[in-house]
Image (cartoon, rainbow, N blue to C red; front, side, top):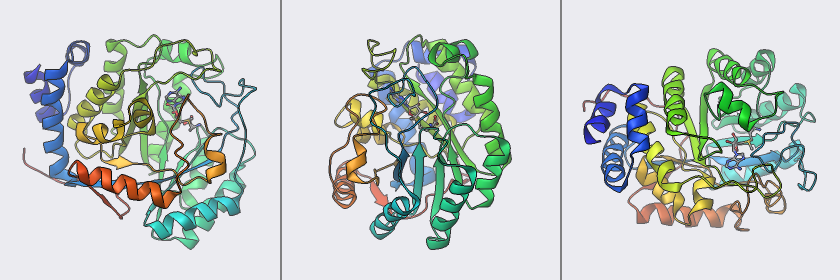
Length: 350
Ligand code: SAM
């Protein structure tokens, strides 16, 4: 296994068969070695810095029906809310005071937020906080809509491809959605000059090492600046209620592989990791991640953005939870920095 890990580190690519071999046979020993190499590579590019993104979950309404997601339109018991422009700006204000230099507006695909309204929101945030980055994560849109939002000042966009394999995609989504459309959206985002992120869940129903290898190849082809991955966690009001949750060790292993394949990538240690294991986010950083996305949403809506069961919603104010995160990062030898944390390409010798 070590030889394949070394090969990935030097060549930043592997064949599908090689990825399958690594993923299907991963164990504690190969994970430990991978995490050591990933820490060295990340150290060379980003040092011990961990970037923070203030996550604002703007709406729990969604017109889509992804089979895994708790806020799918078909979940009639989901609690729905949406934030007004003023409420979103109030979250940004709190975040800015705390030192956040990136705001991430994430939500279900909610038609209430027309292009005009979103342009107005993005524009107002950029006007008020010109030095801060605005990231959007609002699902699939037309090229024209992405273009308007980019021109309004949006810097980055997160849209996980979920699974690169067409037939696996159709096992996780209704017939009205397609992997092709998802990939079209990602290519549009790239063409428009967004710093863009993609990603997938680890342990979704029907996933195999072959499918995870295909995800790695797709990510290699796209060369995104950001990749978000986390374990699949079932939600009791979805068709996947009785499915098994994804494995944390395998998620960490995939994070390590991503760090070696994309040394400069911004890789969040996700909320899903922190939900699956109490020290999941710290372990994500130790496996190769370098971004954390604390929640800036108003306290009273946090429990309503339940995309999977038991999603962390500590009830702590943003300031308190940030203080806790700073401490937990220091404990493992990392430090939270208050910069935009843009994608950085550096030449480094291995
Ligand atoms: N609607 C936007 C989109 O589809 O990109 C953004 C919000 S969506 C809820 C964000 C991500 O949550 C999805 O890309 C998916 O990977 C993840 N997610 C949804 N349900 C999940 C579950 N049950 N377990 C883990 N992650 C989940």
